[in-house]
Amino acid sequence: MKIIAMIPARLGSQRVFKKNLRLINGRPLISYSIETAVKSGVFDQVYVNSEADIFSEIAKYYGANFYKRPEKFSTDSANNDQFALDFIKNTDGNILIQILPTSPLISVGEIKDFVNYMVDNDFDTLVSTAEHQIAGIYKNKPINFKILEPHISSQDMYPIGTYATVLMGWKYSNFIDNMDKLGFAYHGGKGKIGYFPIKGLSTIDIDNEEDFKLAEVAIKMHSLTEFKEPEYYNEIKNHVEVEVPEILKKDGVYKSYFDHENEPLVDIDQLLKKYGDNLSWCHRLVNTENNSATLIAQMPGEGNRLHFHPNWNEWWYILKGEWEWSIEGEKTIVKKGNFVFIEKGKRHKITAIGNEIAIRLAVSRSDVEHVYPGESL
Image (cartoon, rainbow, N blue to C red):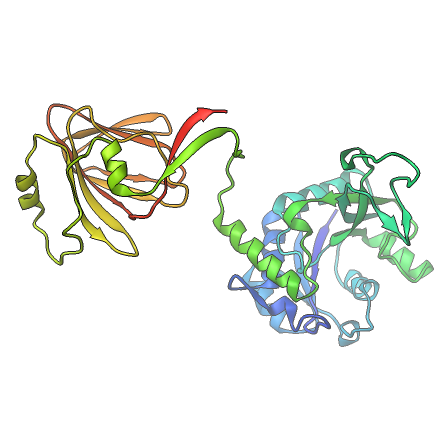
């Protein structure tokens, strides 16, 4: 059984000019669907189907083939049945999976599940759908609820399915048979028809300018964001501190020097000799709109309180002595010459240990929020 993927792409578009070539996050829209289809590994071949040769370059770059459809199937009056039938008659396959390039966030996993669901259930046609579990109206009449009944929670309502269209599957033979006998085949015609729900970002479908804006934001965030376990506002009662001098006082550093920031040249060894090694102290070297750098010296047993920075990464370089570093509960001993980096959001606590003063260079920014976890509510 040969399973073929076809990604249709006209050069023209009525609602959005050349939308399949329009860049999203620096890449043409169609490239996302091609790349995902190829990565899925479930297709014998992946094709881009278009009348425009420019799509041939993109298809080749992302590892797909190119099928040049006749111009007559690329006009505004041509429909999906016509160009799909043309493709089926001119390619060797048993199952055709159509993937629309206007849903750039369809996932590899959903493509695999869609194809397997069609094969395992021996469907002639499989349609991707989006489920809406909420009260639905069609022609001013309720679909999944009754007006003359008490309110039903949406979680108890039967979901309404609408076409997602990003994924459509047809058996070659059934599609041809429906076209010959009925003159259409897109919705399944005569044959075994199934429906496959997709969720979340995959349901984004670009039809207009507003959709493009939504898709661009979603793609950028999806590429940058590391999704973490859910956190809840009322789970822990936190308090926030920002003023560095006050923070250092609470951490036991009473001698703080902020009067000689941003000097072009500083002799660190001379500073260390000047402040000595009998009392804790700090000296801020740099304080700009970009970052700050502060020397912090503390005696054995001294350190800071457990905290985290929600929006800022920071790092330290150890100049002298030893510190016990606790990051998310894992303890590590660091000493002179070590470099420490802590990602934003990670709880950490620093304590000087050993028999001598410990000194670190802390690089962050002066206005960074320090969040101190309190008691659970």
